[in-house]
Structure formats: structure tokens, C-alpha cells
Image (cartoon, rainbow, N blue to C red; front, side):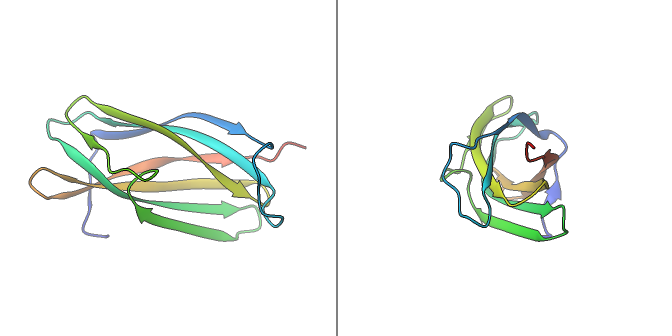
Length: 125
């Protein structure tokens, strides 16, 4: 996906990050964090979000890469000025950092990308 150009006017904001111990998790990653994001189209062109890539790195340096089509099962189409908000979660074993990108195309088929801001998930003591 290196052919995607960075589009500064497609902005991603972390709205909220919440430790959610009530969620079921696998034994090897017992700490769930719900995150709430908003993708804003500040450009003059309509874009469609086609996929995403997350990189989650824990305190021990272990890295997990998650890639896939769409966003929570959708491929949001954002006209100029529109936004798409959603929430999902990561499950981790220890303190971790998440970052990544969304990949989109504009109406002429040109690929664009928007960075997901880096955020820390610190397991409560």
C-alpha cells in the first residue's frame, strides 16, 4: 500500500480511550481497551475508506499488525465536511502503544491515506 499518498485534510481523532475489563478476552491478552475514533474529511473531494492497518507494540517490544478491509465492517464514503465516528477495541497483555493508518480512494480513484494518532494503553495497577 505504499502507493497511497498522505492526505493532510483527512483527519483522524482519538475521541476517547477506556479500559473495559468487562469484555471477554483471551487468557494471554486479558486487558481490553475500547477506543473511539472520528475520521473527518476536511478536503474538497469525496473519499471512501477502503481499509486500515494497526500496529500495536507492547512494553516488551512485541508487535502485532492488524490489517483489513473497511472500518468495523463498513466502507464509509465521506463527502467534503463529513465525518465517520466509530468504536472498537484492542486486547493486550501489558502496557502497549497503538498507531496506524486508514487507506482511502477519492472519486477519481487516487489512493490517499490518513494516520491514526498514536495512543498509549496503560494497564491499571
